Image (cartoon, rainbow, N blue to C red; front, side, top):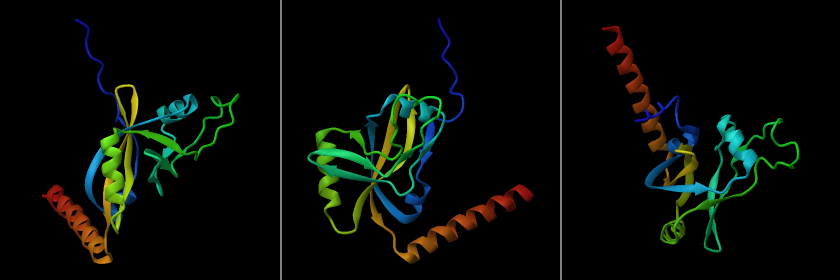
Length: 157
């Protein structure tokens, strides 16, 4: 029997940490991404960014807007690489319909939380979210600071 390869490192490519701070997460989805060859190679090198990225539903299809994948200078020599192009998300029709109907409500939107590897495929974790108020953001920050302080106290003893 062949041994399985150990999972070296993390499967996460990029995270949208700002989204967890700015929004209440209601529901998450997993979507595939339609990518070009140079984009996959850049993602293997970890050259992706999800800040200020959002999901747009147009003509029954989901699109990822604002994501930035930096092209490697050794890979994209024969192709004109657009690092912030609009990328298609691969979702089931029912999931797209659910996202579309929920984003029509006031204060709701859909944002990507992270890009990660699932075996040899690139997946994007999407979330239906509601915007946080200022007092919610302060409470989140206060809880995070208290958890950090608690961990310091536990390490000291």
